[in-house]
Every structure is written in C-alpha cells, then in structure tokens.
Length: 247
Ligand code: ZN
Image (tube, rainbow, N blue to C red):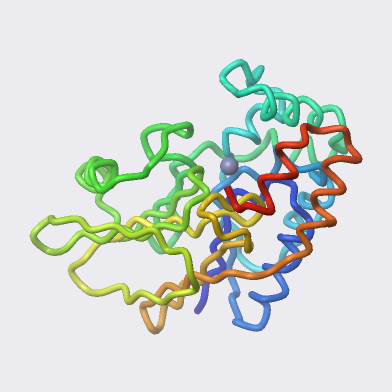
C-alpha cells in the first residue's frame, strides 16, 4: 500500500494537477492532506473540486487559511496579502466548496493505521515546526511512530532514534528515507502550491508502507499560468512573484 501525502495546496491548480499526474504513476491508493487547500492562489474552486473528487481513502484536515477563507476566523492574525487573498477566496467559493471547507476537521487526527496528522503542530494549527527542539516537544508528548505536518511549506524530515536523540533535515531535492524499527518520525512533504525552500517545483511525498520508506518528490508545473491567474484576480503581485522564487 502507498499513501499520497500533500499539504499547502493554496489554490494552485497547475501545481496540484502536476502532482496528481506524477503521483498517479506511483500507485498510491490513499490520500492524506494536512490542510491549506486554499488561500494565496486564485483557483480555490478548481482545486477544491479536484480534491473532493479524489478516489480512494482520504484524510483531510483544516489549515489556518482554510479557517479564515471559510469565515470561521476574521483573518486579523494574517499579513495584508494573506488576508486579502482569504477574503477574496471567501467571496468566490462555490456553495459546495464553502461547505467543504467549513466541514474540514481541525487536527490532530489519527489515521486507522496510527499516523498522526496536523497542520502546524499537534498542539496548535498555527504553530510552526522548524527545529529539532520543536520536533522534540511533539514526540515527547505524542506516542505515534509517524507524525505528518505542513504549514511551514518546507519539506522536512525529523528522526528520533531509540535513545531519544533527534536529527532533522530540510529536503530540497527528491530523496528517499527509510522508516526504521525503533525510530520515530516527523515529516512535512513541503507545499504543493507555494514552496518556500528556494526550489519553485511543487513538493509532495509518497509513503510506501510495504517497503517502509518515504519518498520526497518534486514536480515542475506551469508557474506562469498560476501567476497570471493571481494577477487577473487582482490579488497582490507578491503572491505571484514568490512562486517563481520558491520563497
Ligand atoms: Zn500554508
């Protein structure tokens, strides 16, 4: 069995399409998404129509942008560009997609095979996990062998060995890591729709449960068309520009 792991889609249709067609060849039968389906980008309905129709077992949780775009929060904690995009999203969502966003579950959520899912951290949807110290605080509190998170838009791999020591890496290229017995892991697949690790390619991961491995993957997509859609919608230019820089 293989699981497609995605996060932080941010209403970027071309990036999502590129990831899904790349992943289709890898034979994943389940999908996990750690939230931020919308926000920043100008194609929220296209992205939500697509994810709602994905086949196979699905686990979706809410991200902070989904919360604001759905109207559950006024976005006062956001910077101006993020807030502008969230309010624009709320005004443009179809009825079905607004309902979908409103019914997303707040993490943490555990899958039927014991993987813990959260948007920011299991403590707080808005909390960023950057460091080994952050990873340590989570792994000492939560017993799962594998925790999947998003929110930083940085593909990241943290491992805790049997003695409790933690090492972490930023994974900027396609790479495979083994999931070993006796060790525990905290993994962020990176962002599909707005990568921030200075690699503009869309990021995602596949977990191969038989081989006990996680593949971090990167895919090129048509950045130009996404930028044009953002500008056409009248959203802040910075949201288009940053896609080309992957920052
Ligand atoms: Zn995000």
